[in-house]
Length: 355
Image (cartoon, rainbow, N blue to C red; front, side):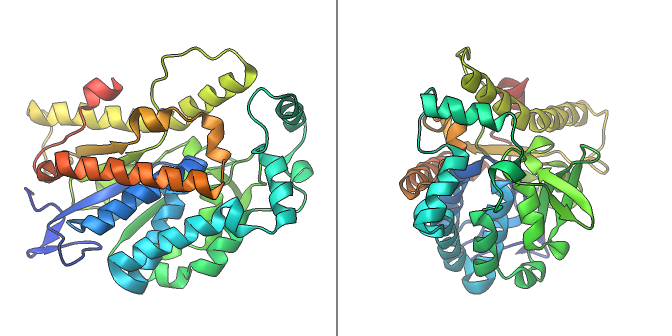
């Protein structure tokens, strides 16, 4: 395969608008409310229209963006996908999804209403360490559940054969990643992929409990090695790899531990991609049996990294809009600088970025 990655008999595979010239697979990280940055990235890519999307792998908020995009595309093509993403993120915001009473209760659970280090926040954190999700959230409030039910037709998503979808969740019993594919997806699979165990009870699928997929694959890349034709993978990265500051408070330490945990498996897979690439280039492995992946990345850089990990639980609409605009700006910059390289060579230096 060369420049027209992901093509078959001259036609692009995947979700391809009229202007599509090249195909990629998308890898969408999870990160709670920071997934609104990914919404902005997808909005800009769909608006530009030159990239066909062969497959999407996602965890947590990444899986949510994936199914919303797929359903919206089937409804109205690229513009339908953009509109459905906007509707979804507005719906799950605290401003749009819940009644005033529910907003107050949900805000108490997640601690939006007080900053890190405040006495009330410290009190809440102390109780969170001894109370289970069932104790702290007895009504199992989850704005994601109603939004998925009302906005997403999963029967339609399952029928979208043009797009390959891979959604990860973490098996509570085994600690291993479970990858759910498009043909089996329901709202429960997405809820499982986005289930933070400190807030929500585990989601059972076929009698087995699952937690957030970000713990074991954020997102998982290996399905894109074996199940796609395109050699180009575009990673939308939410979680910073490095922070050149040392955390001291309990909340700062927990925030950094969360970021490290949610990046660990991704780093391992990226190192494996680099290792295989070097073996192929040295002639020790054949491309007949191994894929020489071309990695690309869109991230929010210092602007997104400036938000603490705890802001992943900030679902105020104004904050989601801010992240959306940041994502659009990042994607437009990436397209301007990098589009010509897609299908030709990787633009993410894995050794420099992750070694």
